[in-house]
Amino acid sequence: MDLTSTSLQQEVESKQYPKFNHHGAVNGVTGSCHQYWLSPAYSLLIDCGLFQGDEFAGHSTASSPKICFAWQQITAVLLTHVNIDHAGRLPYLIAAGYQGPIYCSEASALLLPLVLADALKVGVTRNEKLLSAFIKRLKRQLIAVSYNQWITLPNCHFTSVQFRLQVAGHILGSAFVEIRHKCQDDWFYVVFSGDLGASHTPLLPAPKSPERADILILESTYGDSNHQGRKQRARALQQLILHSLRDNGTILIPAFSIGRTQELLYELEDIIFRLRGEHIHQHLRWDELDIIVDSPLAASFNHAYLQLKQYWDAEALERHQEGRHPLDFSQLTTIADHQQHLAVVNYLARSEKPAIVIAASGMCAGGRIVNYLKAMLENPVHQILFVGYQARGTPGAEIIARAPNHGFVELDGRHYQVNAEVLKISGYSAHADQQDLLNFVDGIPKKPEEIRIVHGETSAKTALQRILTAKGHHPVIAGAD
Ligand SMILES: [Zn+2]
Image (cartoon, rainbow, N blue to C red; front, side):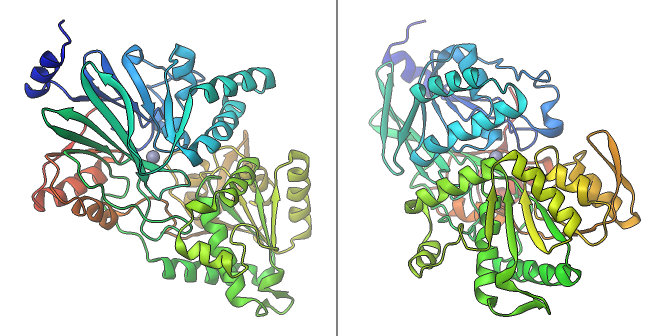
């Protein structure tokens, strides 16, 4: 095949290129991985995420996700953020032989080695030598780039190609990716939304729309719903704590270490700050309430969030300037060590001392929360507070389903009766809701020629497609390769 600029131009014009292969996040929300082809020999990979939960089956054997796509033609990997469902297949891509650059934001470059080492430790190996060899190799391929700066990639034959990361406001370091290549005398823009943040996500600024997107690849996690307002949600959290701690006991909050934990801490600090001096009950003041974050990864992440204040939003910085410490307040204890973790579980289970514990995993499928549940689920003095989506088949979903009749759930092969009170708050999501997604699209000055909807359940994708079509857009629901 003649790959001169003229032939590339002809192919681009004949609509064969650019083209997309979606290797994940098409029939659900996990496994994000999109290959963007500019020619038969030149492609960019946007994210390389792991499938999770029910979506894992069919894409992987138990311990080895498959890299069954043309990785040899990848010129560069562009990473939107470090969540495992966007970055977790990177070790397998590297193991397959990919030696090219992996571009990400500066914050993501700091966080990614922590996240991948943690994931490999849990799922693959605890061998420190192997882990550190992998991290060393990863760091050789990682290239940190600033937000809002065009970076030139190797030419696609004779055509210039550039990309730029913009703040996505989803988790620290998250970005949406703009890619442009020269097309005759103009640029052609393709934008990958990655995961967009909600407009009221604590700590992080909301994303701004791209200035141009000829093709937009848009996530749709909450394409069919709008979140509860932030104020209502904070009030609900305050009420639940008051209600729960009347008779002491512990409130267990299963939460993912990245993003959700920091959001919760930010709001808890605010409640405690506003109500300091006031009583939860006769023997307990708000500023005496112990908040425990029990997760080594969350501990590292809190540390990173504190180091990277330049990426906080204006409200968080203002609080910091007033001498407040949203992620590091005096009632907060962070536990990284495993022995200490076991000691705290025992202590709280025996003493019934009022406390709030935040531990991963968010859906109770593994992680330290499981030890707390095993020790406390059967005691009605405690509460389990769910703040996030519980996927079908996870222990979290089982606990919610069994709670009304005090049924049994299985944890580590043993049955536990659900006697603790089970509570839920909606609205804690680091994801844009339907309105946020529409605002993102509406803010693009010229309507995209095409919007490819990814990263959502069917109902969310079709709802978003319907509403975008009604607004005069041309959305298609992306299919798997
Ligand atoms: Zn995602």
